[in-house]
Length: 70
Image 1 (cartoon, rainbow, N blue to C red):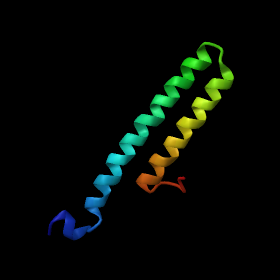
Image 2: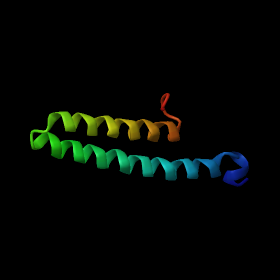
Image 3: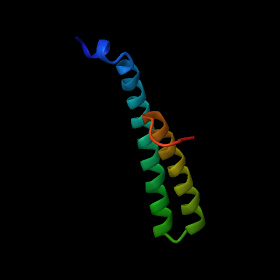
Image 4: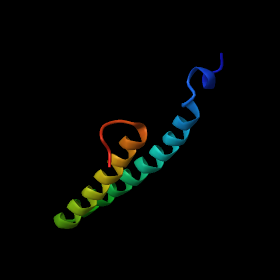
């Protein structure tokens, strides 16, 4: 029995995983920007960047089926 027959959603998981990777990259980028802003003393800007990072992290979790997501 092939994996697709055992789990008909297996093809869809690959697409979700690809999207989740894209979302994780975006989350990491915004986290990096937030850390740079915080290090330079721009704390209000850093908080906005952290909020954007959290948004993408939530989208990643939703794509993977973890938690409630966005």
